[in-house]
Length: 334
Image (cartoon, rainbow, N blue to C red; front, side, top):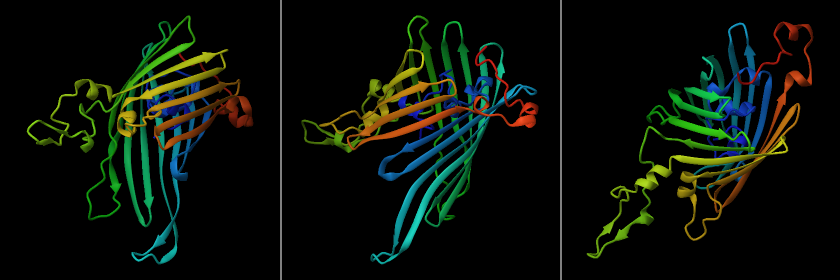
């Protein structure tokens, strides 16, 4: 799930964006950098069916070891459920939730390159069953401040389960993904265009839909769509396209198109806006406010709002702050 409204507005994945927003460090650890020192991101996703998703990400740079760090938490609250037996007797209520705690470290290599890694501890509680996993993301980013091209590649969710929901069942498959992104900001136009590719370790990610079955002249039915080539369809399902326009230097408007989401979630007779997402961002001196509205299907959209704060510009922490470089500022990109 996207870790911030800015990411949601860009289609749910964005691993190559040099914007001064710490949420992108949650997409590609290599995007964590000194310019995000002391930035705190707080985001709330008002998901479907009353599910709430909260995200926190905080960045800090240590010049002595020339390394930038980020600490994050993602929490999913599925709400309260009624506990019953198999004939409907009510015994009370129970809750279900998931969370992950993650730590990111990133360093610069040469003039244009950064590399980084994120270590994650994930935990899930569903009724009386729990599960845990250790995962890691590894990423590289290239950004040229002259040409304004940005390229990123990330391998996400490499890991294994520590505890399973039940000891009798096999371990759950982890959401491994390999993603590549590219973005271009135009020098004489306040526009950034982006394309991100996902599931690159697997070519065919089409859903084998029984509704696509066709009957031939002999009356036999082909129930598998995987026997057909569908080259263009298979290719496009790996892509997310996005654009962001900056107005008056402080306001951004964003739109994105997630081909896979639209292909799997639309109703053919009423496709509506499935797969599209939109957003806006307001950049103030000490704050950033982001909003996103994402459409999964005809069932409707969900809303997300986030606030980024530059803590070292909001308050100080005395002599201790001077020792740990609380008020220090760093160049965002060299």
